[in-house]
Image (cartoon, rainbow over all chains, first blue to last red; front, side):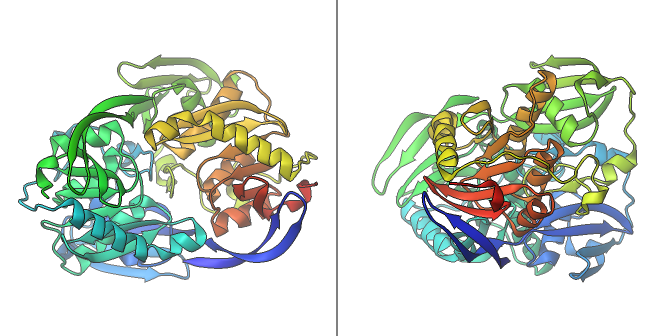
Length: 258
Length: 258
């Protein structure tokens, strides 16, 4: 996910040639039923999870069983997916695309009733500020690529005590899609699970986690107003600006208990 | 660009209801010659600049003169643009979209020869680490919304001494598009100018500045490997990780002099 390149480090009076790590940016083209769907710029790891998660987030598939074949050619940067229904892309499906703040994912804008598979999240999960503090500590420890290159987003799926899946990508949406893609392909339940993301929480991320019925989303960063509104509407607990045991709860505070 | 909402601040033992600022997320639908082109999730400011900059970056327009009419209805979140050629969208133009790490903008991937209007940047501009340090200091001072809400990217167009245009947006691509949109609509030259961005420097941002023949791009954040390769190919000076007078120069170091 990273590579060494030559740089020149300038200071007020000196300049030194040296090597430094930078994060890799990899173009992955997704071909669905023989038609080019999209090219994602991403980190070259767990690309099948990314493709599956992307297709799920975009509403092209709902279950693993719909995928009849998935072939990754990492050399060419192409993943080919065949689905049972052999769905063809229409201009409609492209015209509906929403260019988002984060990753240009297609979510027909904002009317929950319009969005396939998005409904209020029903979950009795409860957690404490201490749980959240422990989870975010574990999350920071795992985010090693970021610390070395400064260029990667992380996302994790957790229960109230530990991280279950951890993914990294240069795109914050890709990192979340990799998680849900892995859940889809490996039959890992997302029920009552918690998502942590290193990125800002905007409305599109909320729709993404809502589609998987995730009751709690946590970030050290800030949410947008629309992110907060969507979280409130969909009964998702939205926690931002986590700093140790201190945090801002923007929605669904009833899921927090000491 | 921001709004106050009710939050609950949790600590290990206390919880306090209070108000806090969050950044606004606004859906702007761009209609080109009567056809819905895209919905951008953005900060609701300078939306005409955003629309013009987006259309330029996407290759739909090259000059202001091609726009015969532009009407913004901020209430509905719609900007309607008419162009001279009355270009109709084809499925082709949608199939070519690239879902990027940052903002889902359409850049047919990566072969500079394929990219309309992108060629090597020819500029004799030179600058010193002190110039860069002063510019980035001014840039930080101007980035006020970010400091209050933690959710906004900034971008600036500068000469070697001062900021000429400054824009903010929840999307890092949008912030850059607003700058170039303003340049387009108000006939501001971009020749020999410098761009500063608060975000990561990936290949798409490089293509965007290359289209405007910008010779220098600066960020306090990291570039990707592809960003570095594109900068080298297009003879753009790429400076990252600026910390006062200390900085990493990833490409085009010949434009730096003490």
